[in-house]
Picture 1: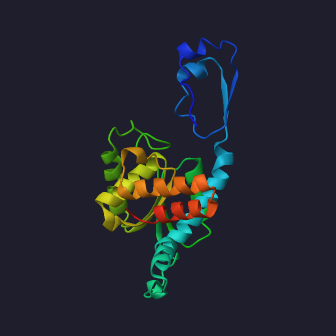
Picture 2: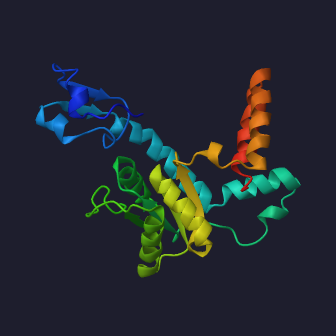
Length: 231
């Protein structure tokens, strides 16, 4: 993921460059007018990558709406079936919000048509099909999501976001928890190294110990427990 910006200074070093085969997704981070003016063609693996990502995302949405992860964590901790008492959660009639309608988002939206969900999807300001300049502050994107959910009377919703969209949904859940019933994060651009917690430190030590012992099961359990700890 990621590559040099295709500006004139860079392109001058490669005067015979005709085609860029990009093995990742969006080309937004490096494509420039200078590149197009020189007639350089670009191909990406966005659609191929989106197939497996959209399948995984759909699975996470369905499992989240069934409260599979918190129930699994509670069962592991308590060792009893009391965690499953109460109304059984389900998918039919639930609202799913997709932040970003790129290749992955559109594919997830199509897959969700098979189920009886209310699907709300949008591109952030200045991205994809949404006009205007991009919002400069993350809070602006969060406010947009709040207004959208309010305007459509769609809360609480299971919110799904990719990359920067994942940051929007994290902030939305923190600042407006009443609007969110579940989160599905796909490669959210959240740097854990800059947000250290005791739980993260414990996880890092536990995972590293499992790696040194080459104990794959212990490593997987460390990741599982950390991801479901909610702290």
